[in-house]
Length: 386
Length: 209
Image 1 (tube, each protein chain N blue to C red):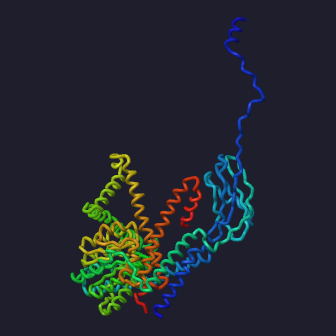
Image 2 (image 1 turned 180 degrees about the vertical axis):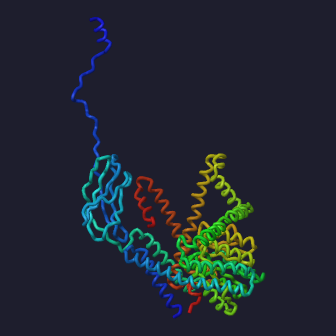
């Protein structure tokens, strides 16, 4: 009896009996997706419906998208857990469709209620591009205003551009040395604005070449650019009163292969040892190959492009470089035509306007971080370009 | 008349294409696709002019025995062989044009020209990085930091050097690039407007009549 009592005491107090009042472990149930919205995709050409829903349920491992249309209900997509939107581009315009979204976790699937029926249709105006339209209208007004001002004979100041001032000197040098001038109007097509700008400069350069009685060589990569360049040079010689001095083979098509063109122009420079090289227009990886070869032949080099990545190469290897918009300003600068100068002035004021917008926008965005001025954060959205 | 018709076409299409940019309707998109096809067709016809110019230039050079006339023989023979092979066996992936001319000749020649760029970059960098003025000294320092920050040695010297290199690229460098881009965009719009309105007529051959 005594050992039994000792064992009983060693065992300690008896555990309390289980009661019915203890809380059962919580059972998490998969919830249906909330906030399901289906709407016609804005600013598109139709045949598209956008779906959005909320990822409130952390249990969902995937989402099912079901569409009900004239063909009946059909699961059209299975999205991953983080993918809470769907662009249905398999719909017909003006046909009503309803959608349901299901949250899926393991074997469980819980469907949302159907959305109101929605149809797609094309839009006639892209409202997301309203900011571009406003900027364009303002800029057009500036251009028209300054062109009208120039027409009235008002003297418009244009800052000096060293690269363009050097054109006369470069042509004169070629005449003195009795060596040709090579003009490369870039490797772009005639649809590129830089090529159009380059062709306009070619006209002015060719006029000076004709006046000085120098030789001009214009290798081309694009057949259409070649055709236009030939007409421009021919016309410039005629304008300068030297139509007889124009040589048909001075403007020629080389090849449309980028590096084959670069090799051909390099060869031309090495053989002809030109006094002056012009590289104006669109250039890509061949820019340095051309400019460095030209520099090694000892030619004066004037380059210009709107390709930001090629500018450092030209600045390094050429004597003068027209940076970005200076290329577009060149024809106005060289010809001094009032109408062209007017548009140049508008460009300057356009830049001033952009500067003001950037500064004001930056200040407002900084202020938007202060809770009282959070409304300014919407301003950023207006400057998004779609 | 010779100039007025192209100017009128340019004005009409310029305005229509500007409006098209803001209209996502299928009719508008279809019109854009159609005009893009027209450009391709016109380019194909212009290629004939290009080939004509190519033949004329090289035969003239050959006839007059101008400097480098031997290269003209290579150019003319290469053009003739490519044309004959292309017309006879087609231009498919398995055609002789691809197997014997394009893949083993043109591709490596293009790659070689591209590879030369590395040497030109070295010589151009040498010229650019000579600290003769304040600006070029600044360029030299910035280039030195960026180059060092891009290789493991830079991080070994100072662990913040890659961050500094990244900062130079993404702040002052990016600011300058964006300024140029703004200027280019405005210049482009102004040039387009001048062409559409017929103020800039250089593309017609320079005349005003």
